[in-house]
Amino acid sequence: MGSDAPRKKEYKLPVKSKRVEDFRPLLESLDARDELNEVFKNRIAKAVQLLDDGVPLYPNDFEKGDDIGPVSAGYEALDDEALAALGRTFRLAGRIVSLRSFGKVAFFTIQDASGRIQVFAERETLGQDVYAVFKKFDIGDIVGVGGKLFRTKTGELTLHADSVRLVTKSMRPLPEKYHGLKDVETRYRQRYVDLIVTPRAVEIFKIRTTIIRELRAFLDESGFMEVETPMMQAIPGGATARPFVTHHNALDMPLFMRIAPELYLKRLLVGGFEKVYEVGRQFRNEGVSTRHNPEFTMCEFYWAYARYTDLMDLTERLFSRLAKAVSGSDTVEYQGNAINLAPGWARLTFHESIEKIGGIDPAIINDFDAAKALVEKNGEKVLKGEKLGKVQAKLFDIFVEPKLIQPHFIYHYPTEISPLSRRNADNPEITDRFELFIAGREMANAFSELNDPVDQRQRFEDQVREKEAGDDEAHRMDDDYVRALEYGMPPAAGEGIGIDRLVMLLTDQASIREVILFPLLRPEGQPGS
Image (cartoon, rainbow, N blue to C red; front, side, top):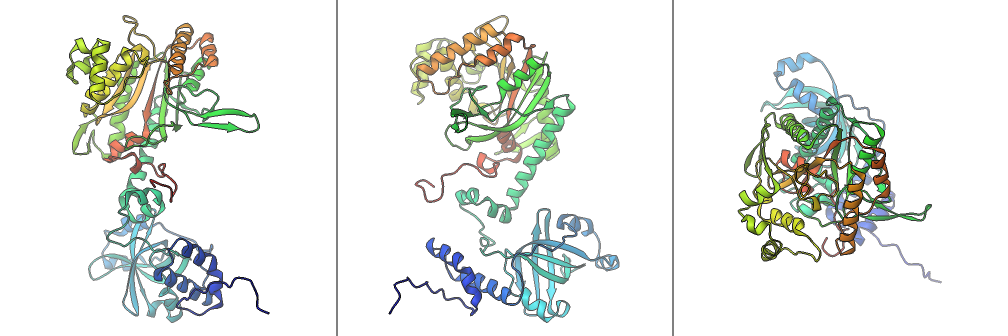
């Protein structure tokens, strides 16, 4: 009697071996995604042959003795005679990124996290059996090599391999050498491949690490203490933004991913710390653009007995230091503009900037109906219940912000759009707050902190009314924070700096996705992905 069981699909590979069956899950997954092609079949065939030769595909016993970058840099200046006199054998490991075979000899380039180096392999040195195994290696494989340095006829520093072994088999081919990953969505989605084939991507993220390390060093040297505050909060606070909502099962309560660490850091000022900072992720349920990612990194710091003007001076010194750490100069190139970050930046009040830079008549700026009409004429909506300060902020966004290419401190923002800022002593309609703009975008937000609990409660209540009127980004009431202020918070100033935008500036990147390793994207296969 015949069997009703479905027959396994036969996959014809250019090799005959019982081990082909071991690769059936990979073959089936590739086939299901319409990815199974001759390239994959040949790679799998080589993997089968290596196993048949007794070569493990993923061993874990190779001991790397040297990094490629220091070897290349340390011996690049030596001539062939000096290299021969070294008498030293190097043990390197890296991914094969190019391979040229000429029968009994081959040149290939390997790459690790520190750099690249050319390797020369020949059958005479390696032996016939080892060289035969080597011939089954592919571009993308990770290999371990040992040997001595010499120079080719063209003068290139090269490792003459006396040993070559497979460390990790690559089952997928890398993008073609000269075209690489051209589709930006694929670059972001498959960042692991982007980092292999795009040296500039690696450089950007190394610079990002340098920036954050240098920022921490600057704040540490200035007497600030690094702390950590909750990422899940019962009340999202410290900014006006729409939060992400989650749920704690054991406590059966909703929680919010933090939109800012501000209110917790200021609680620490109440507790007696005088200089604190935090570098960490924030989460805001907002749109995605070249300047916005819903998950982003900020540094916030708070300084007791300081004023917002003190933070202007500190910010100038900080940015100048970071620029020098990255490029060695106060001046950086950004999208065709030479931006001077040396201290001494322009300082204008909020209302002055709308008049002098935006070119708006003060009669319009200070008239709600006229300002509203101008905002709507330029395609922006004015929501029901929004007051003059909110409308003025929209005028600023339209007519001023894009023009602020060189560093500008814009200060004295309207009180109604600054719920956590201290009122100005001479004019309670404005606050002692500034925002820093460079290259037409906000880079930092800072202010002298509001520490009057009565005033703070009133501001929260105003925000609650705005939320009830339809403003999803309005601040919520936080009774515990007001209670903390009732114990007494010293006068202080605080600032938040967007790390991603800072990295964009210092690496000349137009899109925030270029400076975030894994930006938010739709899952593959979904509409719009």
